[in-house]
Image (cartoon, rainbow, N blue to C red; front, top):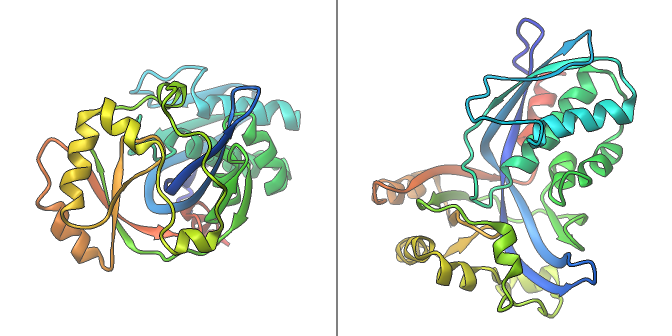
Length: 284
């Protein structure tokens, strides 16, 4: 939707990890995990328009982004894979905080692949785009496929699921957490027994990164303690964002109004179908 002057805009939604277990560390250093990804109706926006040369231009670059940025890397990866001679002007409307565990970079990359596949008329399937996205990051394929999923392996093996879609209050204390740092800590639990979806629904799941992050980042610990007084509070990914589920938007907003002023926050609806493709459906 939102076509104007040749620009095509798509949502790049946030995700939550509803739990996160690590079952083993492979010989190559990668971690095998179990998690559930669910989208939110809140996130970044990506806009792009086609160029007749092969230039990839990221405009409105107020964040100082470079060729290492996932949006640019995604565009160049698709350009190479499709052997197109076309380029693109791309705009990134950034709302999601860095270092929050909301998947912003991966979502931006996935949405870039989907948009450019359309405007360049590459004709790649979702599975082909997901395979490309995996080269950019383990979370990218789930954003390409666009359905809430039970994920295993390094995050690339997933099964569509339909957990409840509550309203979430998402809180980001004034902290950025390095995923690489957390996964490098020796005390991190890496031998969780595999569980089933039924186990998760019965409440037998947690985020194994949370104790480590709470110990090393007092701001996250404080936020979890505060939000936990109002509802069950959890950390998404390796943090620093935390979340709690509510039955209604009004309940979530009532708690949000009480938040300390130095914490960022937003209220969003859980979505089992990605807003990325809601935009696409509205166009057709």
